[in-house]
Image 1 (cartoon, rainbow, N blue to C red):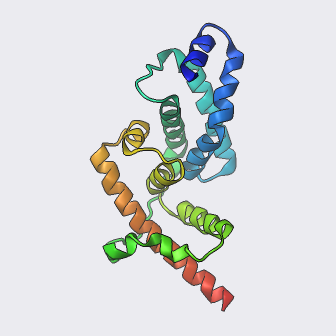
Image 2: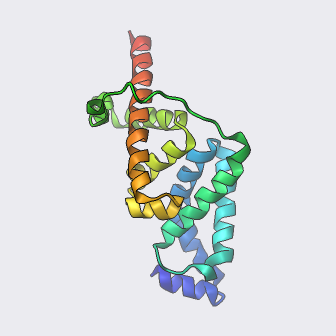
Image 3: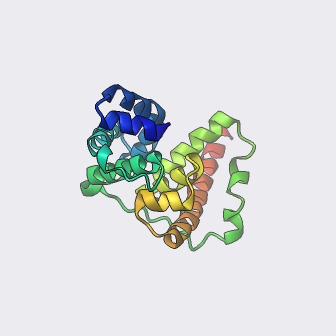
Length: 186
C-alpha cells in the first residue's frame, strides 16, 4: 500500500502524504527527542524531516522499508541540529559485571507499567545521544539490527557492540535512579 501511495504522491496527489505523517510522526518524534533532548527542537526536526522526505520521495529506491528511510532522515536531521551541543556521557561501564546486564528488567520488574516508562525515559534522557537512539530503535521501535544499520549508517557488528555497551550504561543509570527513588521513599 505504501508503494502505491508513494507513486500517487510523485504523480501529484499530495494528500496521500498525510498517511505517512499520521503513521510515522510519533516514532519520528521519539527518535528526534532522544537525540535533541528538547520537545520544541524535536518537533522542528520532525517537521523538517517530513518536508525533506516529501521533497526527496522520488529518490526513495524501495531498497528498504519507507519507515527505515524516513527514520534515517530524522536521525540525520537531529544530529545536524545538535552538532554544536553534543555532550559526552562518561558512565563507567567496565565496573558492571555482564551478568547484571542480562537482568536489567529485574531492576524495575516490580514497578507499575507507568512507573517503568517514567524511569526508562528518565534513564534514556541521561544516556548519550547514540546510546539513547540505539536503545530506542531496538527496544521501543523494535527495529532489526539491519534496519538500525540502514537508519544510522553503522555496521551491524558495531551496532551489536554499541547496544551491548548501551545496555550496560542503561543498567548503571537505572540502578542509580532507583536507588535515589528508594532513598526518597524511605
